[in-house]
Image (cartoon, rainbow, N blue to C red):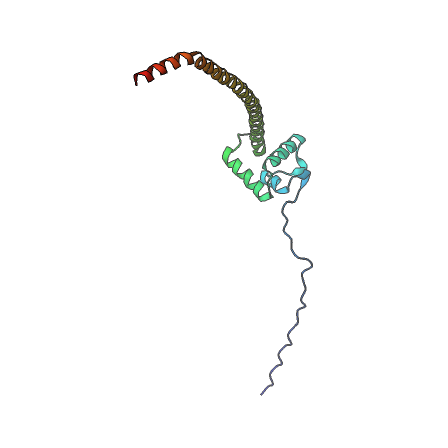
Length: 172
């Protein structure tokens, strides 16, 4: 009988430890301080943008910027779904930029209006306090005058009242 072949020796695989622990990247800024995900969202190359287009992208990102890039992207996607597709010849970011620009104007006007209302409310409150103080003074003066007049009437009518009281006692 032939002899069995010897089994091959197992090969030892060297183990390597990871070089460094993995870290989560939260907000990587890309070209001009805008993450590359924003450029990819609009399907544009940042190096080929004109300065006006770059200004629009910056304004859009400034509006959408939040805690993380994921939240910003969701905000952009939701806005795009809300306002709909751009017209023929209009880019996606131009349509969003126009909405953001109008939204910023509306927000600034609302803020300005609220500041004016607040200013007027404070002014009227001080006016009301002043009028209340003046009225309290006038009320105090009228109350004093009422008491003085009541006392004067009582004193002037006292002798007459005394006579009628004596007359009443005489009938008892």
